[in-house]
Image (cartoon, rainbow, N blue to C red; front, top):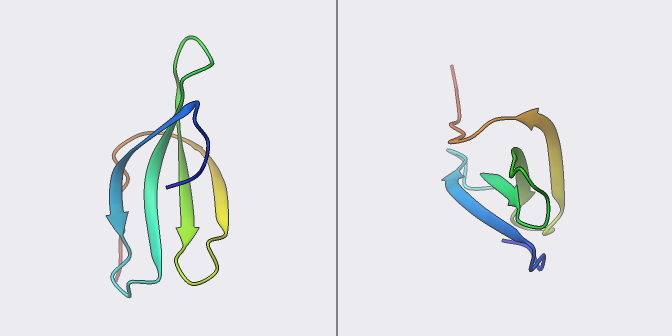
Length: 62
């Protein structure tokens, strides 16, 4: 997902409109490992850290 060689990206989840991917980011150079959620905009490649600790992200739409 990103060029960070010290990170593991998991639980990729496409947005229903296909514009974003939500995923877990595990920093492998930090112990103990922790997971944060990030989102990447497909068109621009812009990555945002959601500042939320968690794993296995899912999209919720009404």
